[in-house]
Amino acid sequence: MTETPTAASPPPAELLEVARTVAVEAGALAVRRRAAGVEVADTKSSLVDVVTHTDLEVEALLRRRLSELRPGDGFLGEEGGADDSETGLTWVVDPIDGTVNFLYDIPQWAVSVAVVSGGRDPERWTALAGCVVNPVSGEVWTASRGGGAWLGERRLSPSAPRSLAESLVGTGFSYDSGRRVEQAADLGRLIGEVRDVRRMGAASLDLCAVAAGRLDAYVEEGLKPWDHAAGALVAREAGAVVHGDRPDAAPSAAFVLAASPSIAEDLWTTLGRV
Image (cartoon, rainbow, N blue to C red; front, side, top):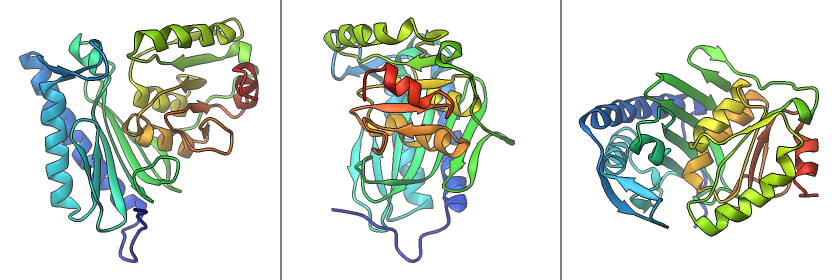
């Protein structure tokens, strides 16, 4: 079913306040649970694709708080499935993006909360507001449609490298070992053409890093909707080029690219996707 906003839908800036409120609360809970110790609750697609008890508890908090603040909206979460929308709006959440980093106490994980119109398909939805919180660093990344992208009170804009050779590119790898081998081979076409490559383990934060100029570009295949919903909006609102497996396609499981406008076309060509 295609969801469309109702006439009573609030403006993106108002939705952003909801996203920020619940993301910060969820991040605080995750930090408390991490300090108390982490246990793996289950595995998903493979032995290395883990879910912790904290993932489940944080998503439950997000679902409850969003139902209080925005009754009738839909919900799409990584761990708990989907609820249909009565309002045309759906909240897309990742309770802990970078669960393996969280498990190993590597301070590169985030809570990601976005609200979209147009249903649960990222190729068809329109992202209206999003917030990505790194609870360890205290950084809060926000964006609303037409309202720009922000790190705290600082408005964001991407870098402007003069060439692909002077660019730092982020990426990620699948939890499936066979797919990782294929992705490593794909990376071989790129690694000799750029300044260097980073794999930091949390897609939402990588997308925000492009928005802030900490990365010049980010590319990855196989992302789930909750991995990129908020981060892609932050990157786009900052002024980065953001698209999927075609320059006119939205980010999806097939592909996500976010890049400085000065290198986006060259990066796309180098990846062999033209």
